[in-house]
Amino acid sequence: MTALKKPVIAGNWKMYKTIAEARELAEAVARGWPQVKAATLILIPPFTAIQEVKKAVSGTEIRVGAQDVFWEEKGAFTGEISALQLREAGCDFVVIGHSERRQYFGESDETVRKKTQAALAHGLQPVVCIGESLAERENGQTLTRIKDQLERSVFSLTEADFSQVLLAYEPIWAIGTGRNATPQQAEEVQAFIRSLIKAKYGNKVADCAIILYGGSVKPSNALSLAREKDVDGFLVGGASLEADSFLAIAREALRADEGLK
Ligand code: PGA
Image (tube, rainbow, N blue to C red):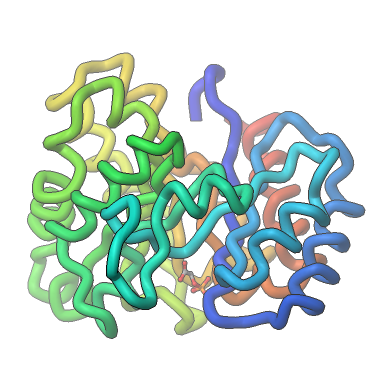
């Protein structure tokens, strides 16, 4: 984390929460995070709850995101939602290429690229997820896989566009498993990601790039992960479903940023 940046803590609620439950959770997060400007909190509810969550956090610094987007602006694409529609509903961010979408819904680096471009064209900041499987890690292919994903999805963007992108390193074996990457494992990959950004877009873009870590982040491991130089915040799944644990993670990220770097 450099002085220019503030930590980003994003809560991916996945397919959890009814509208009423989402409102309750968003209100609880908002109560526990009054006007804190030193870190950016992003709530990422299911599509159905976006507007309600946006209302619940209005007047605070908390931002709202979506979990996916389609690349066309409008048309006969049953079941899809466009960047234009997400902006209208109150989103500033959108997660693209989450490993669950890659695994269950055929998301590829090519669709991630198209979705990222569409999001940017409508002023949505993409949170692009990349990460290796357990087999890839065990076969020593982690860094090659990461490089491939970046080259095929976001490295075709212009510098101005790339500067709007947040990356989330999420090793697939750490997602929802309770087994987080160690701070050293996360740092190794995230430093590698930053070095690739540097080679492609130069020092300034690389220094400003926000690279989140995701995969079994909890209050108990957040501080040690956040202390790593190239961990700029978190994409949190399970622990974002309760206000207390999500806020505790955010406070740990802030603590790492304020005192320890
Ligand atoms: P988890 O999920 O925190 O439950 O491991 C992370 C994610 O899927 O983004």
